[in-house]
Length: 307
Image 1 (cartoon, one colour):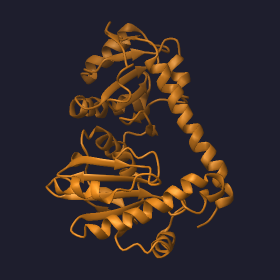
Image 2 (cartoon, one colour; image 1 turned 120 degrees about the vertical axis):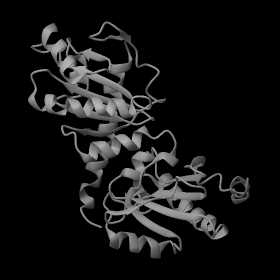
Image 3 (tube, one colour; image 1 turned 45 degrees about the vertical axis):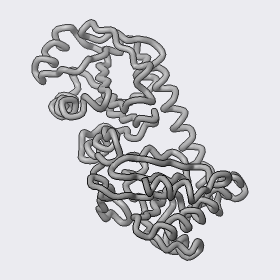
């Protein structure tokens, strides 16, 4: 474990990023928008119920043109599961240039024109193209200029309607581990961090206690159900293999542990609080728990697993 003198600053930056995301989404959802095609579009009820893929672009932007086939293909593949928000900058644009762009790339998604610059300012736009993915819970999980493999993978993750649709996720040192959610069977997944118990002991004592109680409870749960696949997934933040080994020894962990090295698991399961227990049965999430200080009923969970 290293660089902990920077942790307070990094936590502040993480919180600031969440605040930025909230403010940006409010700018998108507070009012109805008129699309370039003349439609009235409202995103007020979308956030929290459906993922969003937001893309800023301009007709005169060379990489935007290069990426447009990718954008249209993504819309055709995921448009039924993800709300696509195509935002033209509205700077140095003409109706003719817009029409030629739409025709050239056969664009079929609704297109907003940010003529006021309100959305560009809210999303801290510094250049185009700019891709933003928002998960079902309304958290920004991807930002970037490239239409690359990482964007494709995270788009597939946020598009999943159920955990059973998730592709293999990267765990440990880049190892691809499919959680076998496509078939029948039960998975018990416990999301935590190797530093959750001791680093937060002074600054967030209740959260620290919850981390300890959570791991102790999951140990008992895994022991009580040896035929169920139990996996502890720890955050990659400030964590290396030696930290994972120390954590295993400290809490006498007998079940499998892995590092969420790509953050795919956290993104795919919408994890924004540690610790979190998720139970998947036959490809469906049947149980989620985050508070381990009050409710640790092994019998109730045993009943769920038996049904």
